[in-house]
Amino acid sequence: MKLARRGFLRVIGGGLATPALSGGAAWSQSSGSSPPADAFAAYEPNPDFTYVPGLTPLKAALRPYRKKTYRLEKQVLSGGKLVIHNYGHGGAGITMSWGCAQEVADILMAQYPNPAGKPVAVLGAGVMGLTAATWLTEKLRMQVTVYSKHLIPHTTSSIAGGQFAASKVAFQASEKDKFVRILRRSHKEHGLRGSAYGVSPRDNYSLIELPSFAEVPPDLVPRTQLYRLPFSPMNRSGWKYATLLVEPPIFLTKLQQELQKNGVQFVYQEFFDEDQVRALAPDIIINCAGAGSDAIWPDPDLTPIKGQLVWLPAQPRLQYLFSGSGYVFPRADCVVIGGTEETSYTDDDPDPQRCAALVQHLKDVFDGVTTIAPRWMIQDE
Ligand SMILES: Cc1cc2nc3c(=O)[nH]c(=O)nc-3n(C[C@H](O)[C@H](O)[C@H](O)COP(=O)(O)OP(=O)(O)OC[C@H]3O[C@@H](n4cnc5c(N)ncnc54)[C@H](O)[C@@H]3O)c2cc1C
Image 1 (cartoon, rainbow, N blue to C red):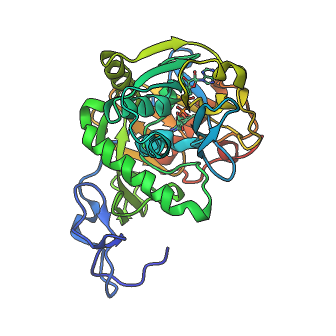
Image 2 (cartoon, rainbow, N blue to C red):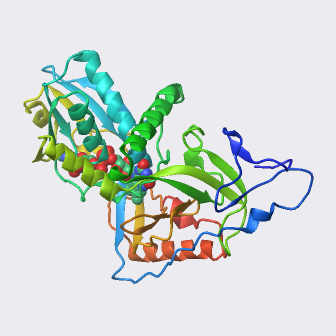
């Protein structure tokens, strides 16, 4: 983006903004004068990238990416059972979860206007299943049973970084309003649930304008172009996004515990076809099986994208996020180093060499040695 004038801060969609808060000088624009005095103030601490091969935990999982659009719609099975599909949210499932749970409730209530007390089966115990089950239990007072082949921490949702951003998720241009409504509903509910659910406001610094926020309304996630990022030696120009961090270990554990407290049963069961679903007692089924949905209802549009992560030890002094050339998400349990997008893989095994290279790359970025993500991070191989 080209900047023309100095003298005020540019906040996309936020109007003429308040001065930059601590960390990061906003790019001032007017007639050729120097950057403001605070341009060099308030550096954020750099991460400690110490990585011990064989000891530092490595993780990998498949983002349930679905070509054209995530799937949020109803299907009536032969025999009359109502299935509401809720999967395919790519790299944005944590972000979209509450909004999708509310859309599920809307679809359900269009057919069953008074669902209180009715039995409903939720397939899957990742973030989509847990939030849908929570909404149906807490708000619609339904009698929910969750069926799943794995529970936390053995779900993709447990591997997610946890940033609120619309990353690697497709939707139809004609459905943009619905997508934005989902983001709004989700953002509001994450905010209401707050720290007990692992939600906290975080500034995400980036060297580039991030595509994952392009479709996120700026009143939800305000953004500021910075004259310099508040780091040293990585002090190039960049962007700051005032977003949310939703820490999956806290969030998912809290959801599951509250459901159990509210009497929701969790049943270990793997489904291989629709007949097994039809055999369930409830007449209403919410399909939140993520990438595993393909085993029950084959879906050629599901093309998962693998992501690999390194979980460095927790560093509580780091209270920001960084992304755009790989990412660093400091959380209470660890510092998540990630950012690979590998489209030709179906396994969820971490590759130690690639993970080591990922940590080295992020270290190089913070050391000011490079800004560009290596090809292996984001290409088909
Ligand atoms: C590396 C990485 C980083 C990410 N970072 C972020 C982020 O920062 N922010 C964000 O918003 N999103 C992020 N995501 C995306 C997010 O993790 C997913 O969109 C989300 O977890 C999808 O949730 P889900 O409930 O649909 O799927 P899952 O978590 O995979 O849950 C599916 C559930 O269905 C069950 N299941 C599957 N198949 C069957 C079957 N046949 N029978 C019975 N049960 C079945 C599973 O056992 C599981 O319980 C990231 C993903 C990855 C991989």
